[in-house]
Image 1 (cartoon, each protein chain N blue to C red):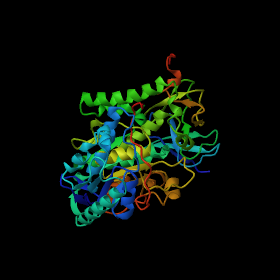
Image 2: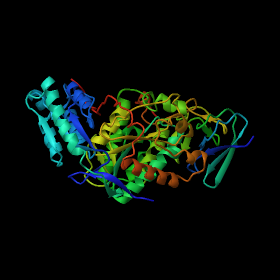
Image 3: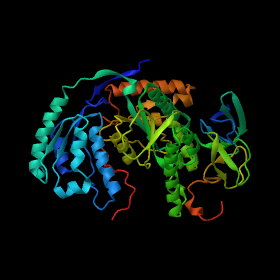
Length: 395
Length: 101
């Protein structure tokens, strides 16, 4: 079994699995640049933090810079923003943050210059130059220890907890044992399963951070006087046979494997070490994957139940700079969503495959995709409109 | 008719997930490694849904994955479907906040 992949080694030592140029911030201008120049991506979200708290504005800046620092990005073109916008967002440092990782960054004017039609022309020219440079990069063999990977489970059903998530858990254990980084999240979906996770935190301080995050989410439900089941489990989960949040959570945490939890990350925060990390976040896929990519993960896994689906789903994913790999443990989902599913652990359910073996198959599939094989969602030219996790009040 | 297979991940679990649609009257064989428990479905248990392996009194704890997943909101008999009509979560119950639990 191989334990290496072919990746792009970046100046800061991180390893990408794709080689793209990021155009930021998201805007009409950025979209026109992406249409004109192959190999570019943009953030389909124009929220610059107007009327938001300093903490949330900081998150917006951190996520945008994090996407630029993601190892799948060769370099970035930063379009001009007005002086007031830059203050609003603590944005001045965006280009600097990306450049600090050693990547080429081209700034298109400052203080209002480089926007509008002129901005489109200048940024397109800059993007074309960067993309050409990027094409001269070559993949090289790197060990599994250089991989960073993140998972969210979605449309959970009973087979998520029995096959799909445990297979991902095995993969996570292998990545962590090799010296890589593995990230999971969705704070609401550890409610009812936190007892096991807390024991795995490396220090009492990390354990407290995890419990604080869980308690904050549960208190939120209490403060609005709602049964959390009005929000979670979602109707799709219930339709597939999941009855309570505790049941969903207990199935969900299997995706985290068994490794010690090194730290609780803020949304889009980059881990400072190696190993398993938890990212404080809410459950929407349009938000979680983006945070994972901003935390530096070049590949994100969507571990799908799908038992409550009665339709096909096509999407280009929502991590922008990181391809989304779809997995399932449900045999019926594997069949119905064959055009979207990259890996199936369903043989665990219908063919008696040992979980460990499914996990090893998943590892090989991940290494293959990390080496350049496209995911099925990656083939589609569509990126979901994005939302960051911004829990603060708006004014 | 052959028994319908079901899975439980922990020997203490009081429910198991069936691996095929189980019509009423069929025998369900719930594996947990080498430990096998059987129960007769008293109603239809759809693919992936939970069947009760033993009786649970109203208010009693229902266990899956080796941990509590909620409490019985009405008495549950072995062989019955366990879902939102007879099982309720305990966590995040803002609707009960301030009342004794």
